[in-house]
Structure formats: C-alpha cells, structure tokens
Length: 485
Image 1 (tube, rainbow, N blue to C red):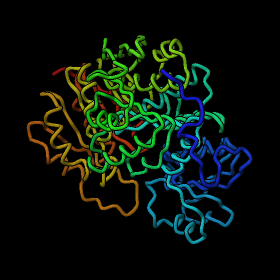
Image 2 (image 1 turned 30 degrees about the vertical axis):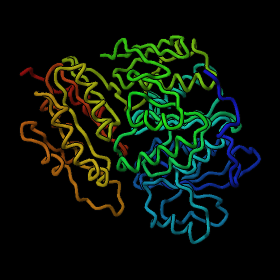
Image 3 (image 1 turned 90 degrees about the vertical axis):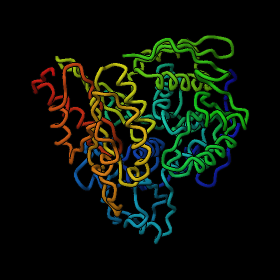
Image 4 (image 1 turned 60 degrees about the vertical axis):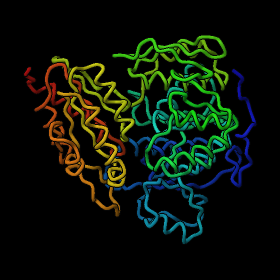
C-alpha cells in the first residue's frame, strides 16, 4: 500500500491563523471546555504555546472535578460560564455544539466581534493543516478506530497528533489526545452530527459506515459524498452498503468481510473475550487480534491497521501492538465480574446501531442480558424513538431485560417532550421494559433483577456520571445476595 507523506489535499491553504506556525500565538476561549470533544482541542492549543482559557456549566455546578484539575494542571485558566471572561483581546472563541447560541458567552463574543468557531470546524482546520491530515468518519466506530491509531502510533514510536478516540481504559480523563508536532501528521475522528463533515479536506479519509443518526439518510448521504470527494485518498468499509456506494463513486479503496474489497478481512473469532482475524493487504496477510469482543471491533481494527499502514507504520508493529490495545473507556468496558459470575459492562452506545452492536456482543457471552439505556438528550430521544421501537423487539431475546433510564438533561432550553416512560410505552408488554427515574433507581433495578451468570450492560452518552454509575452497579452487586431463579 502506498504511503501518504506530505502535501496532497491535506495541504489546503488556510485563512489566518496558520495552525502549523509555531510563532503564531493566540488567545483562545473554549466554551464547554469540560466536554470530551472540546477539552482535547484546548489542551492541544496549550501545548502549542497559545494562551487558553475556558468555561463550562458543569464546572460551575461543581461537577467534572477531575477534568478541571487536568486542565488547570496543563496551564489552562478556568473561568465562569457567564460571559464575564469574554473580553477584548481574545482572538478566537471555540464553542461546543452543546452550547446554545444565546448563552451570555457567545452573545458577548458576538458583541465584541470575536470570531466564533464551532468545535467541529476547528477540528477540521487542524486536520486540513496536517502533514498529512487524516479524518476518520462514520456513524459508528470512529472513536475506537481513532483510539487504535493513537495506540499504534504511540507503541511504534511514530510521531503524530491524534485527536479523539476517548481515554483508554485506566487512563482517566487525560485521554483523547496524543500531541505531536504542529508540522506533522494529524489524525482525528470527524463527526457528521452537525453537518460539518463537509469542512474536511483530508489527505486520507475513512468512511467506516453510514446509518441514520443525528440526521435523515438523504442528508447524511450528501454530507458523506462531499467528504469523499474532498479526500485525497479514501478508505471505505465494504460491509456497509451506504459507505461502499459512496466509495465506488470516487474510486475508494475498500476493506471488510463482505463483497469484493481491496483489503479482505477474514474472521477467525469474534469472542467472547477477544477478536481474531486476518486482513489481506496487497496480497499479504496482516494478523489482527484485539482483546475486545465483537465483529465490529475486528472491523474497527482493520480500518485502524489500514490507516497505520498509510502513515508508514510497519506491519510487524501493528501485529505486535494491537493484541495489547487496552480498549477505550466506556467502549464495552468490563467493570468487573462478581463471584456469582455477573459481568458488568459500561458502553457509550447511544444510537440504535451502536445499541445493536453492544447488545449483540453482550448476548454472545451470556444467556441473559440486563440492558440499561439512558438517552443522551430529549432531541436525540425524539429522533431515535421510532427506530428504537422497531429494533428492540427484534434484538432482545426471551429472558433479556431492558430498562430506560430517564433522559439526560444537561440544562438549557430544550423541550422535555419524550421522557423515558414514553419510550418504554412504545415497546410490547412481553418485553417487560421498565424505567428508572434516576441513577439510584437503576442500581436498585439491577440488584433486584440480576441472576448468576447474567451480563449487565449500561449504555448512554454525554452524562459525565455514567462511568460512576457502572461502578456503583458493580459495587452494589458485590454486596447484594444474588439468588438463582
């Protein structure tokens, strides 16, 4: 496979500032800095010598203390999320897409004429300035692929910046960023959620899959097609019909299990604890082994390996490093197994396809699954409602149990029109779906329902308390007497 080493499409000329210029020193304000997508950008700008300050509602409410400590420790000033710190002299105000346009901060920035840059738009700027820039896209799996690429680069001594991918298991909240030189390669996960995928002009693009998430399929097809045309080279997953069709239109290189891909993936094992396979690249087999279960993780590993090869990481390094990949936090993360063999899994699944992958993987390792899903907002709950009602009756087996935790509310002006009870009412009575009004109720439900040998799967996104919830559930199961039926 040919390597991408420099200019190409990733060398697109940028308007001021030049993000590769180490002499350019700017003052940044990051609104929503505690978010998983924003704090790596803030930290990267700080490592590149810029002045960085930021704010977040969660920090004002006394939450996300570990994130606050990390940011302060890296020299970032934390200020109130009330607009008082938006002052003349700030060069750029970067904001999370979860921050409403009418907040005091964004209002103050507009009044002062400070340029406002959405978090995804800044990420696209960085990718487009990479040497090369690599954008990993898809409605599912892009965080894990990006995390795997970061792991391969780090373990193989390859100097690159990698943004996204979430923290690794055991890494705490310091993950999601591998900071390399400003003049070197930059790899990032590129999200389609707000339409900004069209801002990317990467030297290498990846479309892992395309499914209904955040927007309707017609809109997504258009967005991904533009991304494909703007990529210097493109890799697509042949196992996803939508991604494959977009790739064919631009002569992309395909990988996967099905169809006739350029890089064919052979499945050896998909679980219950790890996956094994072989990826044939230019006629040569590349051994893939990852210590996480599920076919989707083998496909993720194939995409990551192809990106690594494009960057010049040797096959032997890939084969050596992938079996030691620790996994990403909240990506089918095993919290623990009780003496009665109840396994507790924490997963970031927050759309129907991700839920399907997580539940199917859990089912492969247990005769009975207790699944808890907390929708990550009322807007997403409204968008997913019909798909969840159609999918869950086909996905859940007899004996599996499902609980909707109350929809996460982060504050702001959103309309609370699709509560958990409404989502549960969409499902047939035979599924015995229940709801939990809060996390205390989730813990109580699990301890009442759990039986020896069950897998407890907790799913959801955006709520910073979810990782702690999974550990609370495991701790409660350790002290609760579980009786076989």
